Length: 634
Ligand code: BF8
Ligand code: SF4
Image (cartoon, rainbow, N blue to C red; front, side, top):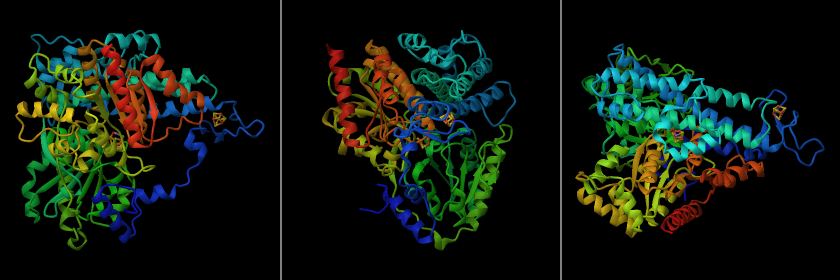
């Protein structure tokens, strides 16, 4: 057993390397943070005003409340929903940036971008109630982009967010309306939540949580429009075959990693890389090799087949290979220490968004008018860096696994349509009703070094597959499976139960792909959790039941970010049982913890549960699926 807290053999090699050269990675830093402060860990530390930090000290007279009088339940609830606000702001701002570019396309103000998927544009337009008959593509495009931008600034509380209103079944919308969590504007809801949780405003934990759920619905709204508009601009992914793990970095090529979340610039880098292959050759390389990290990686994997280098926890290790010439980062989940890692080598770190800079790195501010030019400059910087690469320092782990990915919901439907052309979603419902599969599990979210990197992700996938659960995946979870060699047809043979194998055999016979279908359908980045929820919606509609009856569960086995808290929360509001593989900082208040793990089920049918043991978590998920099937069959 390695001393390192990862199951990834390539990561283990690179952690040894980091140790040799004296670079302290996130794994070392995680160790340095132990033991954790119990107050912070359980959520009962408040820093909302300058009198703080206040901690709940029940044994001291006067210590069972904060200085202002806030009880544990108020502090825990406020802290929790402020995570949601951060997550929803990140996802929706990402969506807004895409919408701005789409509007520029519609108005003919940019040349580097275009409508790539006009069918998706029309589909989205129809769904959100925009007239399409007989209209020019650009006129429709302008209306869709304008509708997306209108989600942000709307202050009329009698109106509702367009996207979730259009993509959610009516019965569920009514639950949200009755509980007063249906948002009207994204900015309004997020500002309101910050206001609500200011010192001396709301002390009612249930009211605070409902405010948080409203923000969480803004999160899915922002995610959904980010997915839709990215598909319109860059194309809707179709199945691709590529590879994953650090072995995807090539010694003889100029290697550029695309890392972060927003595809606006990374898509341009992909485009420019195709044009500048000769310049790389002139510098002595055999070409340019792009690899992805985190969700920008997932975006360019899904649409362009770019290989996965690694996921969140191991991002610094891609630099330890000594063969990374540039790492281009945009926003979210980017470790500031990439810069110090790069200092050990010749690697250039390039930041690309005005709100995300790292001291000492290169900055090419994203500008939609000159995106391809910037992308070319970035690639030339990488080519220059390649010339300075110290060959003696190159050490790339010889580990790479075949990946079959690119399963947008449209791509999945195309395959299901080969079995049932009239009603593709029926293919899953039939398999559930026949008892062939128990249901669907969405494996999502981050890495969290409170546990062992990728251990929970891969164990849960194996356990659920063995129990005939159909798997879909996004984010760093999808990448964990890809890195571990589980995102291909061989993994189905190795890990799937008999029912799931039969299901796959039937699809493989007609799918017409060059590769067999993988153990889990990689549906994209974290904003593409919207695709997962659309699948759940389709299942509910086809089965004629409410979301809370669909045999569908969600698991974030190694959740870490504020965005993950937001995603988990809207999943609960949709009626989805949601496993989290780390203990959430709600446990400091029994009341708040009970609200999110128990009472939520009475109101929404969905609930959270915390379970750090991946086998136990899987057992619980299987039980939930079985219970839902059993009730549906009654
Ligand atoms: O949005 S899974 S660590 S990279 S937050 Fe970040 Fe978490 Fe990865 Fe993607 Ni999502
Ligand atoms: Fe303390 Fe209240 Fe200020 Fe929080 S808001 S830091 S509990 S005084």
